[in-house]
Amino acid sequence: MENRENRMEQESMTLTMDSLSKNEEFARVAVAVFASRLDPTLEELDDIKTAVSEAVTNAVIHGYQNGEGTIEICARAQADGLFTVTVKDTGIGIADIKKAMEPMFTTAPEGERSGMGFSFMEAFMDQVEVVSAPGKGTAVTMKKKIGR
Image (cartoon, rainbow, N blue to C red; front, side):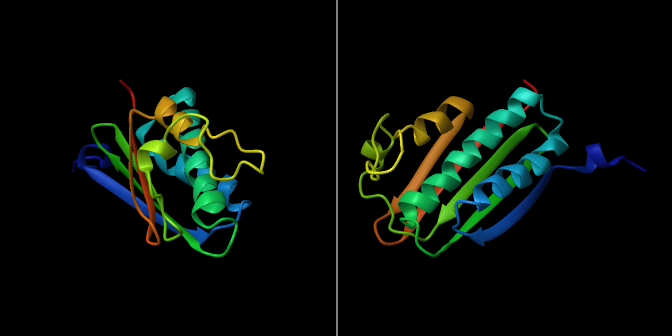
């Protein structure tokens, strides 16, 4: 009988939560625990946690402007070590994704925001893709190869 590691081609999880700032920590821990099945280094795990924190925080603060809504997080772990996580909201969306991804750009300058969320995601993950439409929400998909 083949063992579990040889059978695993891909596993996934989906988490839906309210868009509350206090759920950012829960999201990062839940995704980190799921990612741990790929046996990442502590650095790789910290990278994933940081990127997820930034994406969830963006959804709460910018996507829903601290209002009500839900955030869906889908994560996938592949046997080849590729870890993918998507953070999706149905908030206000992003009119100019290229501008929004520029370092120091923020739609909430009155807060204590640095405008570095997307820059951190890009720094800690291997690939970041943003799909958004005004009035329809945003999906941020991030990928990281574990155990290079």
